[in-house]
Image 1: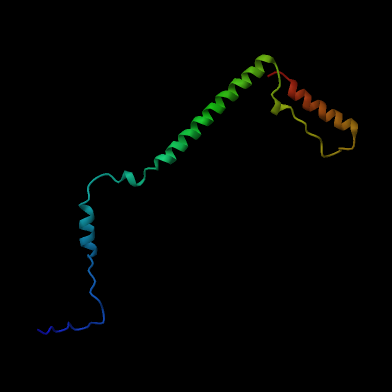
Image 2: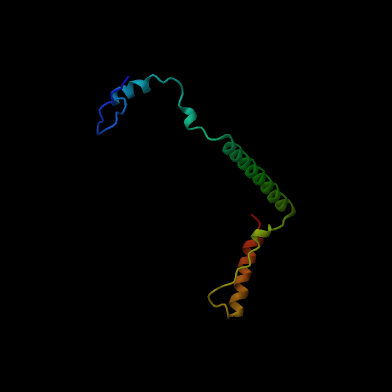
Length: 109
């Protein structure tokens, strides 16, 4: 029993669908493609935690500002300690500058 060897070709055979066949196969796929755009549950959880944390921080900030207003106090962040850059050596000008800032800080809304 001798087997004959197949003739050697310079190129290997390749199987591939034509563009038309591939398009017709792709149209057979049914269902929603929304899962491709859905974010990972871990990402959604982190986004929810971030939103909840921001909500709590804003609510606490609002309560704090309301308490400052009720007590007629100036919040710490509004106590401005600016110094003039022009005429900084002139003590009279610096005192007037500070007086204007204090007036703005202590004026009732």
